[in-house]
Length: 446
Image (cartoon, rainbow, N blue to C red; front, side):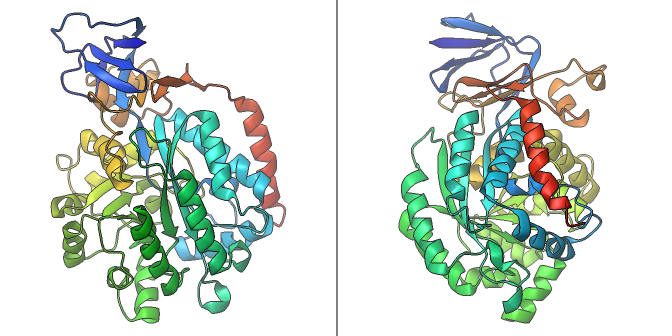
C-alpha cells in the first residue's frame, strides 16, 4: 500500500512541497512543487497540516509524572529538589504507579508529536525489577519507539550521595539485568522499536566501579551510554571534593569520553571542555525547560555544535519540567538560546533540528529524525486552526513561535498513532483518573 500524504500547508523537507509517499514503514518518495501526481494506492489530504519529522526525546524520567509541582520540591534548585523528592519516591513508588506514570508520560509525548522517547530509568524499588519491561510494554501499546536506558543509582545518603537506598539494587543484580535487557531489547536493525543504552545516573549517586563496568558492557554489546553531567555548579563542587577533578575529567577517567556517549544537560563546561566534547563526538541533550525551572543554567548549544558535539533535545523529568511536551521544549530551546546568543544566532529551524536529527544522532539512530526517501515514516502533523496561529505568515516558524502544543495526527512507522488529537486506543479520561489517584499517595505525607 502506497499512501500519498498530499499537499500539506508546509513540510520540513526540501523538494516535498506536494507531500510524501509512504509504503510500509518507510518514506519512498518526495513530491516536489512541479512534480506530477505520484504512483499511489491511497491519499491522505494533508491540506490542513504542517508536517514535521517525528520528534525524538532524548532525556526523560517517566516516573516523575507522579510528583509534578509537588509542594515539597517547588522553588528549589537541583540538589535540594532531589533531597525533597527521593524520600517520597522511596516511600510510594511501586510497579502499579510506575506503570501508570510511564503510560501517561508516553501518551503526553506522543500527543506533542514525539515518536521516539528515551527514558533515563534509574529507580528500582523492590517490587519492580522488571521496570524496563514495563516501559517496553507501555510503548508497544501506543506504537512508539523507545530508546531504553538501563540505569542505576548505588551511592546513597549513607555513603555520601543524595539518593534513597530503597530505590537501589545490588551491583551484581544491576549488571545481570543490564545483560538481560540488552539481549532482549537492543535491536540494531533499521526501523527498530527498541534500543538499549546503559545509564548510571550521575557522578553524585553512582560509584566509580559501576561507571567503569557500564563502559565495559557497552563496548561488549555495542550499545550507547548515557548519564547526567555538567548540570549544576553543585555537581562540579561534588566532583572536585570527592574525586579531585571536574566532572568531564572524571568522565574520561572512567572510560566515557567517546562517541558512544550522550549526556543530559551539559551546561557547565568551559571552553576547553567544549572542545574536548566536540573532538570525541559526544552527544549533549539540551533540556531547556528543566534547566529554567531548577535555575541550573543555559546549555552552550552553539559552541558545542561548532566544536563537533551532537546536540539533541529532551523534556527531562516531569517533576522538573513539569510537562512531557516536546513541542514546548522546542519553543523553550529557541527562547533560551536567543537569550544566551541573539535573535539571528538561534532560529526555529535550529531548535527543530535539535529535536529531530540531533536527537536521533544522540541515541545512535540514522533511520529517523528526517523526512527523506528511505527514512522511517515517523511524522507529526499539526493544524493552524487555533487562535494563536491566526495571522502567522511562516507555517513552520509559527509552530514554534506561536506555541504549537498538540499534534492533530502522528504517524509512527507508517501507522497512525494519533488521529484528531487523540491517541489511538487510549481512554484519556480513565488514564487521567487512574494516574491522579496514584499520584495522590505522594501527597499524603504533607
